[in-house]
Length: 423
Image (cartoon, rainbow, N blue to C red; front, side, top):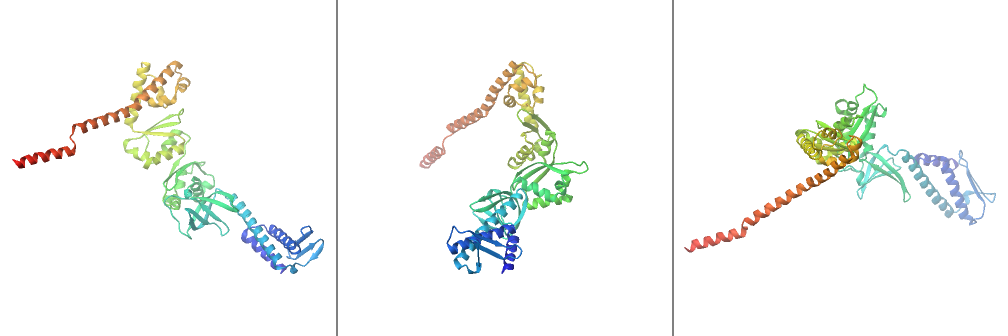
């Protein structure tokens, strides 16, 4: 029986990843509870010791040895209940400690079921992970028994259980997949400098290499696209753009807008805005479906990106030139404004007077005059579409008043036909 105790303790410690010593301590405490239940003497001094190597139990009540075999059924049941509670508590602590250390890493598991949209995943027969609906990739569904990989997003204790929150939509999920698929990343030869994602649709990853001989983009794509294909397959076909990182904002923005080709970029540091000019045939590529490409590029680079065609860009410059000329008397200031990233009257209003004074050395009075006039011009430009819409509505109303109603036309035609028949 003594050897049986050590064998059971060893099995529990192995299966539930609980410290062996803590199980023995819990057993001793449970037995103390059983002895108190047997004798009903809460003030008595009771000690129990289990030999860790042989499993032999020695118990004392008020320094008098007790034979544990003589305890009744009810005290034994008490010891069992205390032991179950303590093992469960120890197991929760063990799971919490283990998975807290693994937070932010990828874990594999098998799908168990859906509960009100939340996906339950069996991680290692000891713990279940919870993947809320907003952490699941839209359009993907999983079947019981299916093996999936996910990111451990968070680990917390709630309602007496450990909740392991999983995610497949977090950007770090892609980051960790790249670390698994691209050895150069895990070896710190290649670094992911920026990563943005719209889960299930598209991601952009900016990479840089610390070794000139290693092409960061080529290494991430792999031979014939083998490495990137594995990641795309894991994500259910999500598009991934791998772009080369560059410290120059202009180069990075151009790279970030790929696959579109950029003609020109004007940066306005005061507004954090980049005006990007692309040819007409590249416009739809640059913007992307539902604006996705430019939106992700803006998040990747940290710049507010405004995309224009050459005609739109030239119209803005022309309007700015005419405006400056009307206020200042000449257009020599326009080139300086363009260098500052101001390419329209609206930009001038947003920038304000201070950069014109500090950066361009313009007289404070003139700068304020330019900005004040720009505000008035901006209001006028904003009112133009409204006036056009009102004018269009008036024209439609005039046409409707001039044209007879359909019922009147029919009535007139019917009357004429009646007269003709009578004749």
